[in-house]
Image 1 (cartoon, one colour):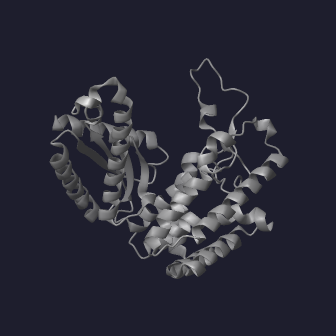
Image 2: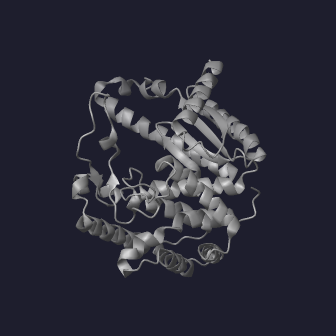
Image 3: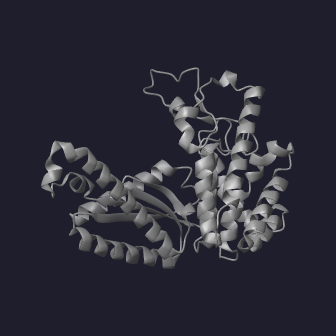
Length: 364
């Protein structure tokens, strides 16, 4: 697929396409598309730089943009095939189904069956998670419970709208990143709309759909539209437990030192992730994972990006060497992937991990 569509418009469409489902209980209407358009319209009124994207969004929901429908539809099918076994279930849950705790689905061994009772989360702001958890069995998810969940999602949506409209955002790029952060804040414990008993949050769904749609829009290789990039920092253990400062050798200072260095490594990983995205002119919807000195990026398959990956890695390596004299290094591996990668992510991740391990071995 050649790029014929503004990529920010595609990303915003993927992020906001189902926002109307969250607002629906406020107005008691089944017109989710209408609510989505209304919300985007309020955003465009506050932030004029969104007006072209808003016009695109309206045309998309009115069925006038077949190319955009093809891209977002394929991205959605990737998610549905992986999470719902290929069955189209996007209208069965949100905003009135709870988010399933994934630990409820874990079997310790084949001789121990899953419990009869599942655990669900009550929709809440991410900072209130530990005080707002709600446990109940599947049999208790009745109409009354669903109405409560629907109402909670609507309240959270109202708070998100109030917060984003109060911010002094200046361009589309900062708006997308801010919107993504607010979806994470408010809807990490609200259910996705692609499975019957969803263990995927609404935030994770729209973020992944936006990343997939962006890649499908920008790719130069329709057969393998994605690049999966796997990177991590080597030397973390030595860095954490190094004894450069005699004061730090004392038992009294150990915990403080570990906390400080762990936080610093987290910032270093964030820096490397953001540097890749900035140099590739991509947004944070392309981050699949980032934590523990390790990150995975979902990138569009372009020759220029393949070339830049090595250039960016070399620049980061030079900086790390100048700062840490080889104590910390960045290792990375990447693979080109087709549209089935998300359905078989564990297979692709194993391939990536093996390739990354081989990179480390060659270095040693």
